[in-house]
Image (cartoon, rainbow, N blue to C red; front, top):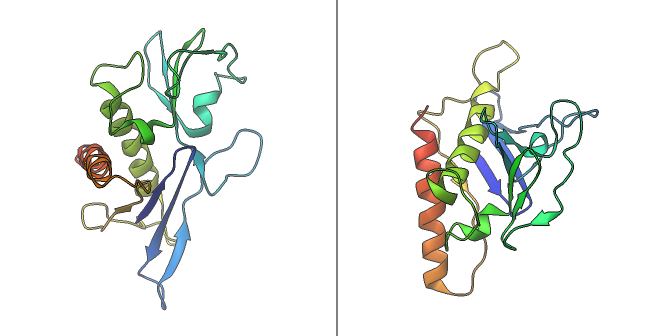
Length: 173
């Protein structure tokens, strides 16, 4: 399973080892009012009133309409507070330094853990044409992309923070 964890978008692919020759498959993501897309925004929305966080394109939408009131960027680190909750974007770039304004319990790492858990759940839901699970996450090799950073120490810190969040998310599977 390959996860391109981008600053603004995330894409995921897996290899169908049951086909011959093995073929890559692209995970698609819901997009309101349109066909599913081969990527989703790297975004998480936590409602103030509690309830489950929303991920990807759904992070930008309420029950029936696009969220409004996202005009107040709180800290310049991809955190915006709306009338109904807090939206986190670009979290990848802030994992290494932990900066991101008001955070849910567990901090920015928890935002990334929740996000990776959602991504892995979507992979787990993929099925073969026969209806069998396409990927066994307990046996899968998962590769996650990292940003290119000129400073070796920053790169190691980014790698560690990303890996720890992904490993914690994978523990649920």
